Length: 491
Image 1: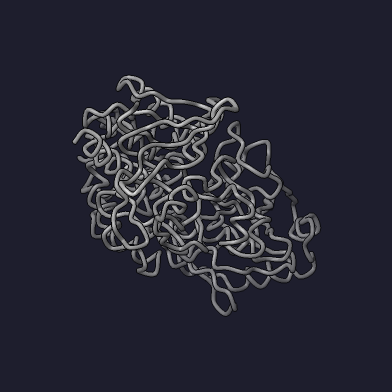
Image 2 (image 1 turned 90 degrees about the horizontal axis):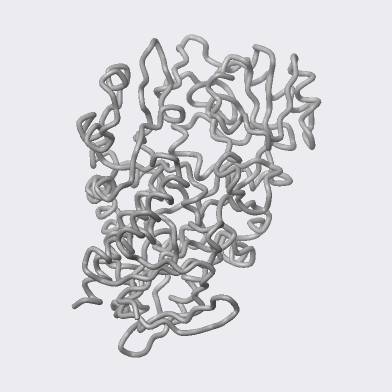
């Protein structure tokens, strides 16, 4: 019998397991997937983590490998807690739960240092969050650090840390239901190798992800058309943890009709492919324009830094006819496109003239697309300098749908276009927890012995989220949930 059972084996789950072990608890982790496919959505992420820091000294403490030469040519800036709070409020229309948001922001920095002390390594996000202008890098959008090796590297680090802590991980072990009575949760019913059996425990942490891989639930909660979206990550995140909690009276909370959804390779497979990872995403759209099947633009590509729009723009693509769009660029910005545009599994067309390019845009009204591009070109302000590192104000005038920043005329061949659809990352609806990460029931009383972390926690995100906050929230609330479960189990 384990003191604590953790359901899930991604970033939040391992943070919970390690934190519980710190309290002296014996811990068993249940992973539904086989080992080769383990790790939930963590295995598919780029590993970016948003946290509050005061300046380069904090970063050098977190990343001791950062050299003096690298620091000298880089403006890392600062990301104070006040800015983190403001970003969380602004992008969620100030709906984010105040208690959860406070825990996320104030615990982000100590949690990062805790992870580093445990053995997780971090590195600056050179290629994706800073462009070199006049010999100097400038980070933008409040996001500076990623786990070394991205999501797979983070998962590898957590797995090694758990092994050193004596934590048992059972693969191919699907949690079927919670064992509970009037006194609270007593363990988990598990199906492994075709056999169902009960695993008793003194406390359980649910960290099994959202319901994004459940087509029926997506349609039920997110709405019509969401059954046609791609799933960015694990096919095993079908809402089992949420179902188990709700079955014993947990209070649902947050935006069950909302999700983190991005622009994703149109012809990507139904679920994420670990061999490609996050390479199907297409996040350089601020430097081009998007064209739908009618040959029209439909959103402000430069409304804000990519970090603050990418998680909601997938939904806008899903709303378009046939659920797709083309991102269009010219040669002036080719060097700014992220590495994901260079993978083999990409739907791409190129041409030396706009007429030839629009003719190649499959399923698009080519004549209208050409008109749209010409109208955009005529509307671009050229009196403001283009700068990819700041919100440069180089926009358009006179268009029904403006482009607010980073507007460049499409006038330099060769031209390129990439086909995208909607890729769902995770769902925003979840269970209600208190500041100790205890799951609350429908009467808002803690369910004894039950805690939750990661994508299963509702109330943090609404409509949108700041990039890098998902992994950070998983680590923060995983650490809190694990500590609470460990203390309860040992107490």
